[in-house]
Every structure is written in structure tokens, then in C-alpha cells.
Image: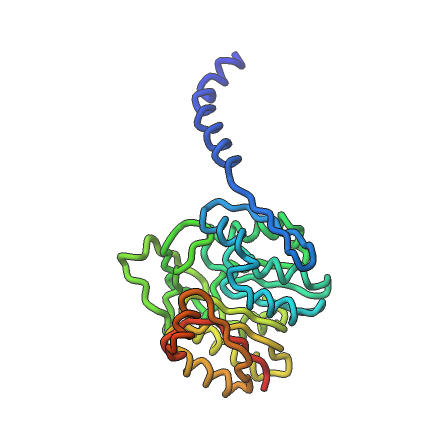
Length: 278
């Protein structure tokens, strides 16, 4: 009788084992930092995440250099637009137990992989993943997915000041909760960050405006890396200067480096900047 009871379940075995095999075929990446010998492990369920993992020490070398020279053992690092966690993991490896890393990543498939990467490297005690979106105001907003795949970029939170993602490029929409950094701090969601990195494919200005209280406070960040989008250089610099910050460095990569060397204006380029209290 027991065998008769199990027979209907047997028909699911081929499909179940196919999914088990599919899960077992996921790629992993192991990257060793030649400077200090630290090893970083990644689980990669898409080509985009594998590529990010394999190149994270070289794709944005100036970002790694900034973290390497600026991080202190007791620092709190806020990574806005953390993706699969390459810079969050680097920071987690270079702070002590008294420090902490907060990784904001609203893209759900990517956030799940980010959590797993933190676990693979035993950073769970000194890192927290927030799948909310950093925003210029608090509340629920449409989050437009450009791609489902882990590690993909270009998805957008539909808030004032964002570059609109056309309906033909949006493959799905989630109602996502957004929080300003000021609200994260005031509500005790995060500790006041010492260092902040912002790379959100277009809503950097609303996000920085949503942390104005922090930037003017006695606990303001010691250093900030902010990606500047095309046409936003003057506005971003003016706002940061109004909060008492000075532009210290500009980092160009890829085609924008070539365009900069060819004489393009800063308003025509996208690049990373470092701001520190004046």
C-alpha cells in the first residue's frame, strides 16, 4: 500500500532532478587580491554577475583605490546601488568587527545573489543587505526592471528626477519602498555612514538631496563617491558645495576617458567623483 501511495509522486522525479541539476550548474568565481592576498568568492547565476565578479578589482580601479586608502577598521560604509556586492565585499574585508557595511540593492534577483555572496565570504556579521531603494523621498514607487538577470544594470525607481525608462524597455514593474538616507539614519535602520558610494544609473541627485541633514550634521560622511551622469555635473557639484563638500577627484573609465582626453566637456560625460568636507 505504501508503494501505491508513492507512485503518483514518482512522475515528478525527472523534473525535480532537472531543477536540481540546473541549480548545481551555477558558476562560481574566486578572485584573489594581489595586494594583500585576500580571496573573494562569488556565486554567479548569470553572465553579467560572473563578469562583474571576475573583473571587480580592475573594472573601476580608482574605486578600489579609494576604498583601500580611505577605509578604517571602525568605518560604516553605505553602498547605494551595490549590485552583486563587489565593493561591499571589499569594504567588509577591510573593516573590523566594530565597523559595518550596508548594501542597498532594489533589484530582487541581484539582491538575492548579493546576500549569498556575503554568506559565502562569512561577512554576515559585519554586513547588512537592504532590498529597499535609496530615494529622494519616502514611500512606495514603481520600480521598472530593465532585465531580470542577476548583475544587470539599468533598472529604475520611478521618482522625480529619474531618467524615464520607456515602457518598451521595461520588462516588469514592482511596487518598491524607497527611503531617503536621512530617514534610514533617523529611524535607526543604519548607523551614520563614514563613507558612501552612490551608483544608481541616474537618480544620484535625488538620493544626495535625500541625505542633506546627514551631510550638514556633526556625523557627516568623511568621503563620498558619487557617479555623475551626463548633464548633471554642475547641479551635483553645486549641491555638494552648498552642504560644505569639495570635489577632490574625478575618475573616468572606458569610452568616457577617451572622450575626456579628446576634449569633451564635463557636462557631456559620465564619471565618478570623490567629495569630502571642505
